[in-house]
Image 1 (cartoon, rainbow, N blue to C red):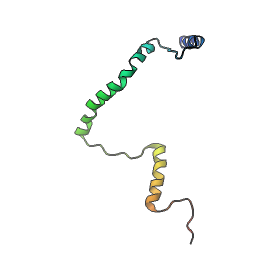
Image 2: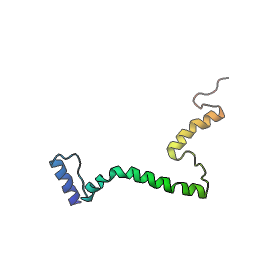
Image 3: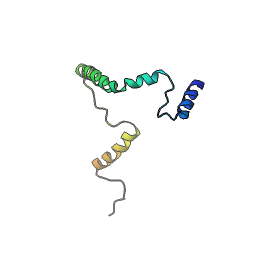
Image 4: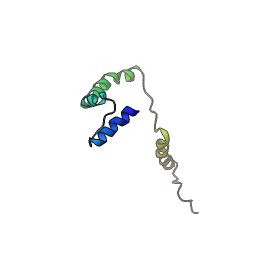
Length: 88
């Protein structure tokens, strides 16, 4: 922790736009432009395999955000908006 804080303090003292705590991280930044290409090539090769072996079922909306998105859809399917009581 002391080495990380020392590197960050040195970066602040030098007014550097970035401070790299592990020394190898600066070298990894050079390879950053290649990561999207590598992911694209690997996914084009690997993703067709599982879909050819078995069919995937659609999961639908997931999590808290999915439930909040599904609520208006459920209300519109039943015909009630749930905001105002019906007047007779």
